[in-house]
Length: 183
Image (cartoon, rainbow, N blue to C red):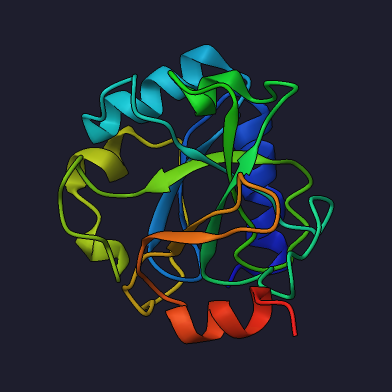
């Protein structure tokens, strides 16, 4: 979790067009302004991530809703995006937006986020696990100690009344089912 001071520094870095390494709730992440093409290109370049691959937009409040009490928490939700918000994060699928709310914090803005590893590499549990090239290329590096090390569970919620796990991660299928299945 971020201290309030770290959250403010993260928000300021991103607002200024920077890229930050930060502790999320699951693994270390990279973040930038989801509407700044240069910052997004820098983030993708640091990871070696193809620009055609989408990234999630992370919020630190519940302005997007709590989705059956799943948020905040260790999930990424794939939501319909008919207004094509945050097109740089959506890449080749502007009709889908990945949303994360890891915890509530006074960051003050949404962030495009991805894990702080090289594309296809191991997830970073500790700051020392973040590749040196990523740490050196970031404008801000925040150390949050050791994290659980399991990435978020990705849940597809694009079809009304239906859900599907795309990637199993930090939150179990049983817990998701208990929260999203009507009683």
